[in-house]
Length: 444
Image (cartoon, rainbow, N blue to C red; front, side):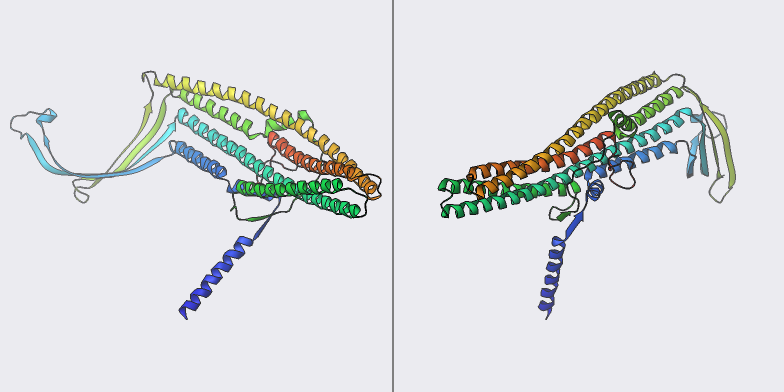
């Protein structure tokens, strides 16, 4: 009986595993982009860097907040008067041993320290920069997932095209065989049709392999198990959304690209750090106080004592360390400004290149669609001529090859148009991967 229950339990586990493995993940393009950002290791690293920057900001803030501490001691000691500079006749050299106890709560607070205030401002700007760099990472990850998604759609469409081409070739081969039996076609026509069929069988297998590879790459981009079965709910279609003008696109990029915004935040951080180094020459003011019991022991001769005061600190000479730190901060600010100029130039290039590529793909889709229509017409006419005995199947084979190329060209043109739109959105900083980020994926 126990063995029977064990077998039933193992069967249930196996059944559950099979059901899990056979589950289908239905996903559209937007969901794929969001899933990639949530699961990708680079996203997690970027988020960890934000957490680290926030912790550093809190560390800088703590220097300006009150510091409260507790101290206590209980001593038993004796004192050598001669070691203290006393040598009086008739007095013993050693005094003690005696007990001493003290305990106090101590409070210190910075009142005026511009250097610390500017260090805090710098840490806040560094946090902003880290968040914007993370946003750039998120958008790139989302775009990569979109590329993988579209490439899989392209591969699936190519597989459908390969299946249609093979089906057409098989029909032509069968028609050629029938006409050979009727004495209309020759053996050369049959061999030619068989060669065409074999070629499309080869293309079909290559297309299936491309689909499998594209699925694996998409799963990897999404950060999900490679055993997951995917069902893409979006399809490739011609996009008719008008392209914004180049000048507007460049302006959008200047205010939206996280790389530019991150560099601007870095400049603000470096400027605050430089000001903090300059303010290090100024005096700082603080207050401190302590209160607590003092006596022989905690319960003998126990009296409460306190101290309170204001202190001022001002550097006079530290070997040139403050000047060196100021020079370093100035150099870092200069580097950040140069980096911003380079980043803006790179963004301008990205927008222009992606803009030209998008315009090109729109023209390519138009011509590919027209070419497909003509190739379909040519195929129909060639088939009719062959069926009516006006021409041999060489004309049909040529038309079929032209149609297959036109189908592939049209699929590639549509996929390239979608990829070009994503690159254009990425260049403008308009990638949207969730409801919370600032990007737009609807190609505004």
